[in-house]
Image (tube, rainbow, N blue to C red; front, side, top):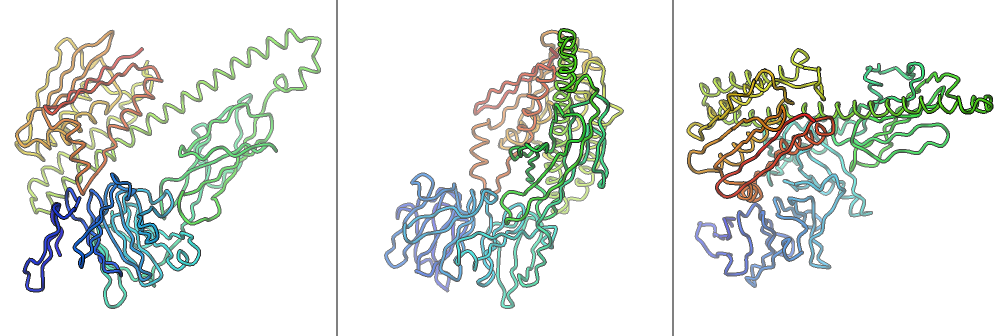
Length: 562
């Protein structure tokens, strides 16, 4: 039996075609058949990125399950497995599912942790159901599941022996010795479930800094400056079995403190701390892993508030109420200014954190192309490509280094000159023209009245839109494309950058991405918009507009300071 586009062909042992199952018989598969499995009742199951089909061979009849008819809670199915109990499991684009005979239905199974793409489902004897996700392999205890319905998960990844990245689509085989062979994006791994060392699924958590000052692992007390009643404390979690996402909750223990809501951000802003000692308690968890005790830590913050800021002082000097009121008002304003400044500093830290995520995002994209050249033994081009990559990475690192940071009248304290930004863009474009020979031309239009050395902007603000134009526009075009970059003056002391391409357009690119079996969602654009929102709160006026059609896309970015 062979799965093709829009149909399934069945052959006998002499490779003669004996039956075709296609749209004429009711098959609703719109693209590839990704996986085929036969259950204990004799039904054949066909999975694809558009849904699921159950086929009765004797009656030559079928039943379709997809999101449109509300019989499948996912867009598509990547892997199908039939376990020893007769249960049929499905690895879908939206998590793990199973078939229930009683309601002739397919329903999701598992915690929110497994709501992403499941590219592999198989089992090791009657003990473990193996589920492949980008984070690694989850082993679900089948004995416990069938006994009580509880879902008990163990994670097997780089921390305890499984070195593969992104377990492959439906790529698993059990040999005669009980070993499980599993494919991934990087290697084929042989696993003996009886010899797995699960390691430690727990996490450790600590307070890493206070007001920007690094804390040692054994530091348990922090002394704030005199009259300082506000501070920012940062957290740090170590979790080898699943480094993310870690969630934090904290509370200020003064007898009545309550735990904060669980948060992904790794810091807390503390205000109005009382005189003396305040204990800050912290706890952390990894959502979806087996129930374990929270990782906890605590730190004592000592404040030294002068006597005139203590409550009893006003009772003692009741006769001087007017004078005391003026003093309290002055210090209230000062406290508010400190709080605003503390929040502003937190936003600056967020801006830098978002920019720090841009470099790994960019490096991941270009290393994939370099890997392709090396695997195809195109060593000369790979060497040239590597030299270009080194030059480009150095440029991005230099743009973020202390020597390049300008702090005079710069809201985020980390701008680069427009000429430097253009140089980085030119290197990036040259880099892709080397990877895609005859792929596209670039046309630069820079207003000659602009002083490129005098204008400073946040680094890597334009690069994600150039990347999208190339990767999601021009690379989908069947003919040579054109990338246009125009820079003109805008408003007072501002500039306007227009990035245009005559590629496939946003709608067509999104449609191609949804139907691709190797979907990858770029985060560069989302990181940029998050960063722009914070920069606008810190004193910029950055506006982005997008116009797209089947003839291409135009992105306009205006940048100025308020």
